[in-house]
Image (cartoon, rainbow, N blue to C red; front, side, top):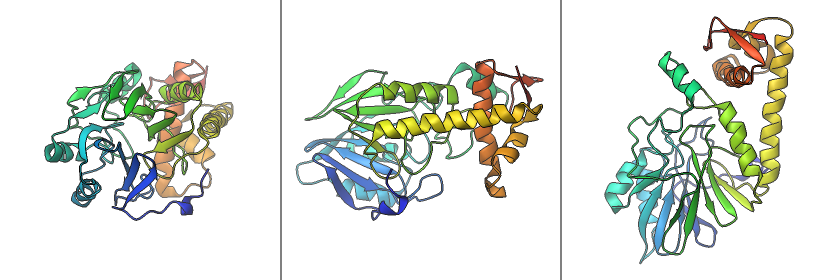
Amino acid sequence: MQAPDDFNPAPGDAIEIEPGLTRVLCPNPSPMTYRGTNTYLLGTRGLAVIDPGPENDAHLSAILAALRPGQKITHIFVTHSHVDHSPLSRALARETGAPVLAFGDWQAGRSQVMHQLADQGLAGGGEGVDAHFHPDVIVEDGETVAGDGWALRAIHTPGHYGNHLSFQWNDALFCGDHVMGWASSLVSPPDGDLTDFMASCARLRQSDWRVFHPGHGAPIDDPAARLDWLIAHRQGREAEILAALADGPATAFDLAKRIYTDTPKALLGAATRNVFAHLVDLTGKRRVTPHPHLSADAEFVLS
C-alpha cells in the first residue's frame, strides 16, 4: 500500500499515469475524499471520462483543458452517485454532448433490507447522495461499452453504494470507492450494504488484476493483497462485535464506544454507523437478533 504522503498531485494537472490514461485531481480534499476525486480520461482520440466529480467549475475547466488537439469526449462514465463523483457529469455532458453512462439512478441497486431502513427514515451518512442523478444510458452488470480504441466492461460492485459500478479495462480496474489504498471503504446504511460489499470483494478477488485505479488516492499496485486486507479487516471487526455482544445486549452506539476506544468523539457517529452496517449483515446471517426490530437504535443480542 502506498504511503499517504506519496500521493499529492497538484489539483487540475493532467497527468498521464499509463499510456492512454490521464488523471486529473479535483480540488475537493476532505477526510472522506482524501486529496480529492480522481477523474480519469481514457483513450487517445475519442475519450471516455470516468467519474467527473462534484460540481466544481475549476475542475470542469481542467477536464476540458486536458484535451489535446484532435481529442473529444465521447462517453462519461459514473461509478456511483455520491456527490463527490457524479454531479459534474451534467455540466460535462452539456459542454461535450457526450452521454452519461451508469448502473442507474441514485436508488438503483439498493437491497431490500436497505429499502426498508430508508423507508423507516434512516438517512445516508458520509459523502452525500446526488439525488438528481439520472444517467442517459443504463449499463448492466457484465456489459461492455466500446469506444475509439478502448473498451470498458462494467462490473456491478454494490456495497459502498447500491448503484456502484467498477469498470474493467484489460487487466486494470477503475474501482471507484469500492477499494482504496489509503483507507477502508465507507459502508454506511442505507446507501452502503456490508453484505453486498463483502460479496463484491469476493467477486473481484476471483480475477487476476494488474492494478486498481481508485476514486481517491494512488493506484493500487497489488489489488489481490488489498482485497485480502479489506476482507480480513471486516472479518476482524465482526469478531469484535460478536465478542462484545457475548457480554450482553447492546446498541450500535454502545458497541462503537466499546470497540473504537481511540476514536475522537467527533467521529463516533461514523463509527456507530459502521458498527450498524455489521449488525445489519449479522442480522441477515441470523447471528444476531435486533429488538424490537431492525433499526439504527435497536438493541442487539446474539442469536
